View 1 (spheres, rainbow, N blue to C red):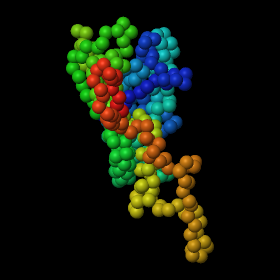
View 2 (cartoon, one colour):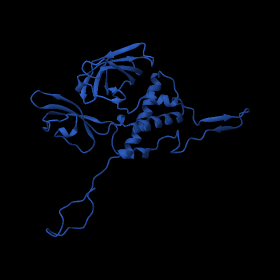
View 3 (cartoon, rainbow, N blue to C red):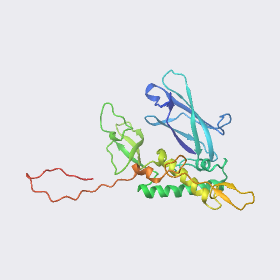
View 4 (cartoon, rainbow, N blue to C red):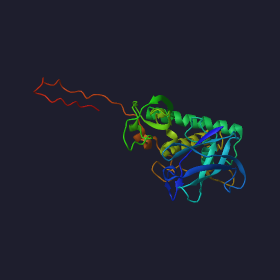
Length: 287
């Protein structure tokens, strides 16, 4: 069983149909981009928060699937279909990218064999470990549930907003879901930590470097060592392609492209002892 979170796309923008009386009705999975052979279906979607809906899919074999999501934008409107969704299953493995995405970079045809899948998952975990060491934090958030929380009262409160709840942690966190208990309180699921799978630069970096590591590993999936551009007729000389340097088109992303996501540490500034009041300011400076 896999859980799939979906954000409706309507008229070229992310859209939440529920406030307008609409509904996310169904998700259908197909085994190819032509979407002719249906392999699984689920629905209706459960609204987690503004603009986010969740489907629960039955157990299906690992691999790449193409989806069509049907929803009504508003009450009385005609249903529309979103065919922009492609899923690499299974989900929920703690990986920010998929073996299929790495195989695409390697030029390895799908479907993957179990041995290929295992090797590519290992390469992904190694690349994630490098990123986590650089950022100083994990790439997979943890779910923390708080029971019977009373939101801060505001007439226009958005319960998917972190500021609506009496809960704080040191780091990144967001509201994943909330459940009304009927007495003015809610059970709330918080995602605590960096969600690497939702950060495109992280996904791009991990995918590219997992592919390059596997390409250069002896016996690796899609391994070919250095890229050969030409071989002489007698086999006496070989020319190799030169890899693009950093910043050029086609070059591997460098890890400093992720610098904005580094965990920042707070510490007080060293400052001389202040004179006693009223001869000094009460302001405190820190970083």
